[in-house]
Structures are given as structure tokens and as C-alpha cells.
Length: 449
Image 1 (cartoon, rainbow, N blue to C red):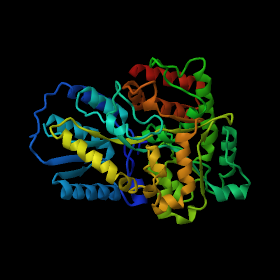
Image 2 (image 1 turned 180 degrees about the vertical axis):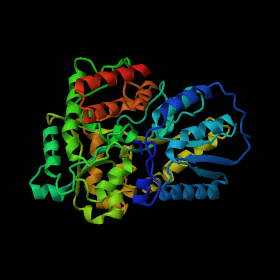
Image 3 (image 1 turned 120 degrees about the vertical axis):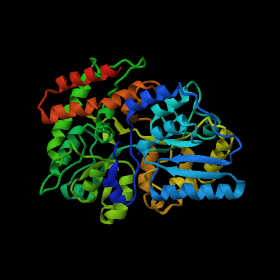
Image 4 (image 1 turned 60 degrees about the vertical axis):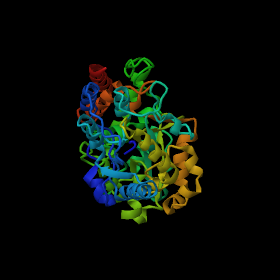
């Protein structure tokens, strides 16, 4: 992801990276109900004369918190406006924002990692449009999520998921970077030996699976919804593709460690940094982790996008994070702060997770200040790969929660069913025919559509 960027992202990952890390998608169904209730709440205003801005940050990494606090201190020194930074885990951010609004003590600025939450708040009249601020720059694809012609958030990063692999093991076995599912499965099989495994894909009913394990399906051209938000995953065109994907996952399963139904984000980081698996799905965070915890693997690690079945396309799973401005009596001051922060401290903030916070703004990739970070300089090949995801026309960027022609609450509801996860489990562990698994999955999606 996100985002950014999963319900419980990890004590494991935090332990690996020595800092609390962001998580991904939220408890959407509960949030939808709470958000609808929020729209009817009459909120007493905060005193307009107050000279304090309240900023709810959902990036709890210590370097990210430090970057925001340094910016806040400088702003107060320059302009006499105090900016209080409150930090919560990403999964708590939306509920914290709602609670504050309902109590009549709304935050002025907030962090969200789910476009559905932005939609709920915007439709409730709780957000300030950021269209003019956003329009100052050019952006990568599928990141602004406009609502009736206005943009209500400022995206600060992508959290795409792609594949990492052990270049040294490839060389030893004479393998090539896979461009088809057959090649991927063969490579994973060849690297499964001696207590080591070819790949780690979560397959439990959780957000990790939906971020880290379905990119192959997107690469093969699967779409879940049409332009009218009608479910098409089981129609004559899509169903054979989904069947092919589920069959492929079954073929991969012998090359995975045991216990992948319980695997979360940090599980895979630990498996890769510990040398247990030869392929790992992740975003830029993986490279940051091995730089810190397994530096011997840095030069041995390569990367590629999820391939399709025929070698014609490639994909990444979408993820993202962004800032919102709440419609409070301090909204003008909030906008002034955001304009100043973007001009003066945005790059400093990106540097707090230099490879994981992938810039969604295209101009940043050519900014010598951003490129001056040692890890960005060192991993110039990875940075160019990340940029190519945004600039190449043949790369597919999809996620369940962003399916459909515009941002809408129905895809997030689909996400929260974990129906695709259950389909994978039915095929891998219950030996269910893939066609039957697709039918069950589709019926479950229809219950929320």
C-alpha cells in the first residue's frame, strides 16, 4: 500500500526493523457503519481563536515521528502556531479521527491509508478539498482518487508490492528471472531443498495475503468489477483466469514453508532476511530491513514484478498513504501549514523511510535533495525500478479495495470478506476444484455488493 503500509502489521516486522511499522487495510465494514453514523452527528466547533493545530500521524516509525516533530517545532518558531503531533498505529487512525469529531475536538490534519475512509469523511462534509495544492505537481497513476472533481487528500507514498529474489542462488542454479508462471514455479521448486524454500506467500484470511499473494492474478488480466460495479470475476472471460491463478498457487504451495496460513507481513520479512526463502513479496521496506539486519543479503537481492501466465504482462499490488485536512475552524491555518510543510519538509519526511515511502509525485524522482539520501543513492537500480512502475504503460496496478472505475465503498467491503483468501485455502488445503472455489468466492462477494 498501503498503502501505503494490514490489520496487525507486526510486532514481528517492528522487531526486525527496530521500529513500529505501518500496516495496511482497515476494518472497513465497521468503519463504513461508523462513518455513516458520523454523517448525522452535529459537532460543536473548536474555538476559532485557538492557535494550536492538532496533527494525527499514523506512521509510528521513530524516524517518521521525529521528522514531523522537527517540522512542527520549526513552524512554531517561524509563525507562532503550535503543531501538536499525536501518533497512533495506522489501524487506529480512522476511528481516532471519528471519535475526535464526535467529541467536538476534531483533529485539524490526519493520516489515512485507505481511500474508502477518505470517501466517507468527504461525503460527510468533514474534509477540506486539497485540489489546488495537489494540482501543483504531476502524479503517478491511480493515487489521487478524486471525488466529484475534488481531491481530498495529499498522497505521500505508494506501498506497491512486488517480488524480491536471491540473485546468488539464481546464479548457482543457472536460473533466469521469471516472465511466466511456469518459470516462477520451476524456479521456486529448484530452490526448495535442504530445509530452504522457494517462496513465501501468505495464504491466510488476512490483509497480508491480499497484498502479497494475488499480484499474479492482476498480471493475468483479472478484473473483479465492471464500470457499473457489477461483479464479473466469475463471468466467461474472468473465471478461467481466476481458475488458472488458483491452480498456479497450488503448484507453488510445495515450495512454501509450513504455516503460511498464519503468515503476516513480518513473517515474510523474517523468512527472507533469515535465509529461509529465496523469493519474497514486499515493498521497499524489505531492502531497508536487510540493510539493517542481514547486510550480507543486500548485494544478493534482486527484484521483479509479478509475471503473468504467458510472459506478456507484469503487475504490482497497489498500496498508498496520504494526509487529509479536517473541516475545522483552523482549516485555513491547516492549509497554510500543509503548504509550508510540503515545500520545506516533505522530502525530509520521505527520507524517514527512504525506500519504503515511494514518492507518488513524479517530480520528486528528479529532485537532488531526495536523491541525496545514502540509501537512495546506493539503491539507484531499485529506485529506477520503482519509478518505472509509474511510467511504463504495460504495468498493471490493482488492488481489491480500488477495483471499479472510481473510488467507492463496495470494493472495500469485498476486501473485508477475505473471499479470495478462502478460495486459495480451499484449493491448497481442501483439494477443492478451482472452479468450485471461484463459485464460492463469487457468492461471498455478492453478499456485500
